[in-house]
Amino acid sequence: MKKILKFSLVLAAVVLTAVQAHAGNADFSLDLIKEEGKTVSFSLKEIKKINLSIYDTNDSLIYQEKVTSEDNINRTYDLTALPDGIYFLKAESDLKISKYKIEVVGNKAKLSADAISEVYKPVLVNKNGIVTVNILNPKKAPVTVAIYNSDQTEVYNETLTADFYVGKIFDLTSAQNGKYTFDITYNGKTFSETVAIK
Image (cartoon, rainbow, N blue to C red; front, side, top):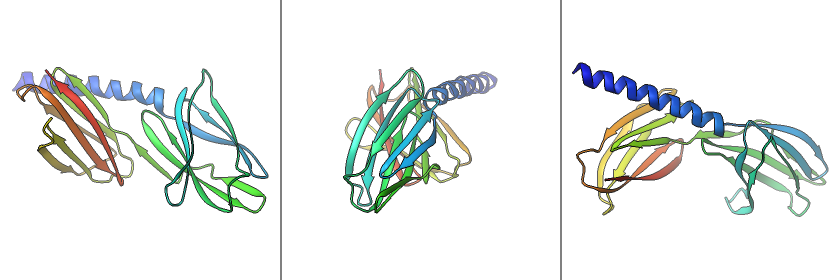
């Protein structure tokens, strides 16, 4: 029993270190530089790679780009072609998805400096069949984890009561070899990731 507890504590420490390193490379903040007419300029700090997209209120994609930079990411968007209305800028890193509101009215466009929503993505680590799931969950939403085998048969489903952080270890060392898909749902989003068990 002591060996299992010790192994669990060591594994938890390794996983938390991996999550912190992952967060250091994928967390970011948006700074609004200026708004002039229908042009908005902003900087994304503490990030070197990000996906940016603009959607309308019907969730239709208007614009999308993948951006990499050695320094902060600076962007200027000319929104002259957009009719009056509400739009959303989605910034997605390896760790989180942040959504910002854009209002286009007359000759002006306004980008919210603060995110209207942020969802942290789950981090899965597979170490020889020991799969850890870690989620930063500041909204303390319930987290549902469903696992499917390669035949798409559900082999596990549980809703976890969430605190600021959710961590769970799955021992798949005795499971059949193959691919297992983890569907993790919280804050209105479902994230899927597949791991291979050999």
